[in-house]
Length: 130
Image (cartoon, rainbow, N blue to C red; front, side, top):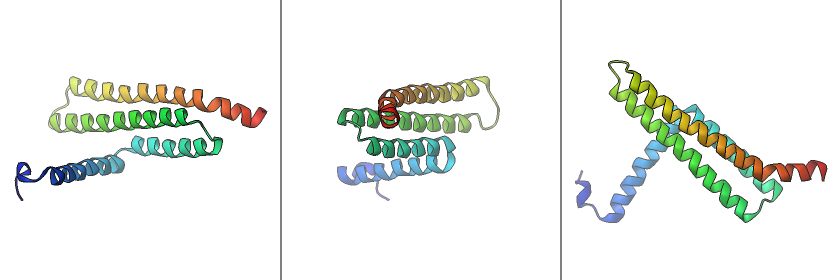
């Protein structure tokens, strides 16, 4: 195979997209929490269509989706890297690194859930009590 530097920019971009898709596939196959986030994303999207949420609410949800999925992907990358580095011997800093990365996903998920409640509670309230 040619050196990547010798490829034209479009072919380099396509190659990079292929690597990114491999990362997504790895995360999908190996991380149950990523599947949970995707499932919730689908349910929230269905709810958004059902309730006819406003355009700004869709934008907010898209930002939330991107935020939490990105955090989960970064968490997976860090965990994989730490597992590789600490392959032969457990180290307390490896645990801290993995715990902090998981904590970032948890904080993000709590914030995103709060935003979801702010968006959907009025619609749910109106639907059932209005």
